[in-house]
Amino acid sequence: MRTRMQPEGYDYLTRWRPGDALSAWGLARVIASRSAWREGDWVVGHMPVAERCRLGPGASPDLPPLTLPADTPSPERWLHARGMTGFTAWLAMRLYGRPQAGETVLVSAGAGAVGSLAIQWAHRAGARVIATAGNAARRDWLIDRLGVAAALDHHDSGIASRLADVAPEGIDLSIENVGGDVFEAAIEALVPGGRVVLCGLVGQYNSPEPRRAPRNLSRLTAAGGHLQPFVVPGHEAAHWEGFQREMARWEEVVAPLDVVDGFTGWPRAFCGLFNDDVRGVGKRVVRLR
Ligand SMILES: NC(=O)c1ccc[n+]([C@@H]2O[C@H](COP(=O)([O-])OP(=O)(O)OC[C@H]3O[C@@H](n4cnc5c(N)ncnc54)[C@H](OP(=O)(O)O)[C@@H]3O)[C@@H](O)[C@H]2O)c1
Image (cartoon, rainbow, N blue to C red; front, side):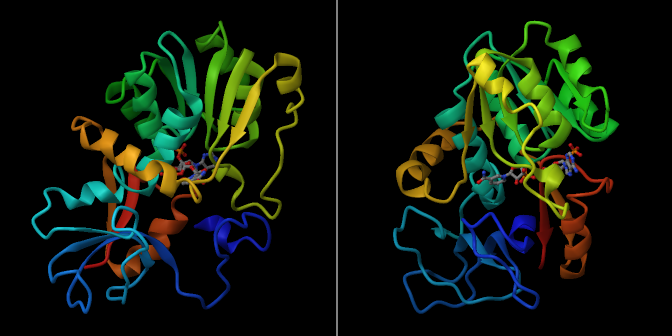
């Protein structure tokens, strides 16, 4: 969402201008319908940030916006694990990163929505995971709940040497969510032929120059490394259904929601993603009603 406020770049999503209504991935209930949707059904997908809105069915019944029957168990799973952040993590790991048993994987912003799912995909593949997070409680959660081998602080100016300490053999795969020093440390630690999946650069979104390349990018050439950037838009038609099939079978996935209550909580909930606001783990959502 922050990149939609940038004056330039990130052209894969419509840019917001002052005064535009915000939109977000959401879960809503049908209160009236002139289409095949029935009152009480759930609707999942990108929608205006509003207590009530008018939505239309999508091009395909299997792609977002989706409708779920009124009696769907745990519809909130579609906010995260089976929603857009789940799909992002799935693309990063199942389509692009493809971690292997015995590999060492670095996941930055590991306690966030995408990162925490990416960690679990890596563990399912039998990889060893190192993650970063900005505060001690979130690092504890990464170790105690997700079982990462080490959790590093992205504020640590010596993060490259911390990473070398915990991954002396190097990193086979890095899922990059943050940018800056963390991205540089990952490139420095990459084994020959290692992979970097570039998912996002959240550490730069508040900067007036939001798209700075890591200073050591050329090391990828020397290491024969692979850099795979991706964005979700454009992947839905080919991969959404495969993603849903896999997630439907993964009951035990850990995918907490970090809920802020009320429409007036929106600014704090949103701005808190980019500063060191005390927040929970997983996917931040705002409950409007
Ligand atoms: N490629 C795509 O299509 C796509 C789609 C969705 C999301 N993304 C990207 O995926 C990344 C994670 O998104 P998300 O939805 O999982 O967000 P999220 O749940 O809010 O996680 C982001 C986390 O990044 C960390 N962070 C915030 N500011 C930071 C800073 N200045 N420096 C370092 N870390 C900072 C915070 O955790 P800690 O401070 O605890 O580390 C924050 O919780 C973002 O880069 C986002 O742009 C990409």
